[in-house]
Picture 1 (tube, helix red, strand yellow):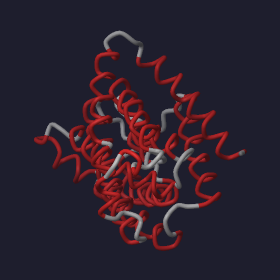
Picture 2 (cartoon, helix red, strand yellow; picture 1 turned 135 degrees about the vertical axis):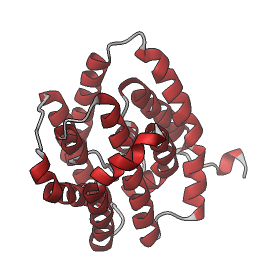
Picture 3 (cartoon, one colour; picture 1 turned 180 degrees about the horizontal axis):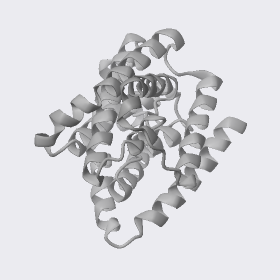
Length: 247
């Protein structure tokens, strides 16, 4: 492969993954959301989602630690995780690979919803008696959003927050949920012929800039206010989502 044969979007994609990794390094989440939102400005949503698979999977598996507490948490979230898989695969079968104007609008809507929820600071509460049936429903809804947009934070993250988990358990739960969502998305994309060997290679290439960004974000976290950084990030996502919906 010569320099001239490289895709024109490659430098932009590398920079986007550095930025997305930096965001995750500072606030603990946001890599797929930021990367998907910015990549979709240059690439079809299905191609952008395929690039996300390896960086999202590796960084979220890392976030699942410590392994000793993972099994009890997985049992508690089993309904949510099963719903994510079913919703993602059902959405991939019904909707096909995300493409066209509708996919951009759906992605923009997901970004707007996520940003507004975060900026509002709303905290929901899901008592144990409702989690048995609510978890699978939230998981299925998250899976449908994942299949349509490649973003898997809504409504899963608000639901996880509603469980009243301790901070470390909440971070681990997000890593577990995002890992399952990433794997389910990869299967859905493969079923729609949108995740080929070539796509896997490009996704592997995006891992290095994502990890670099996370390392930079970890250093910045010691100097910046994560609260204000997150607020600025959400305002940016709100504007980006609005542009996708209105353009």
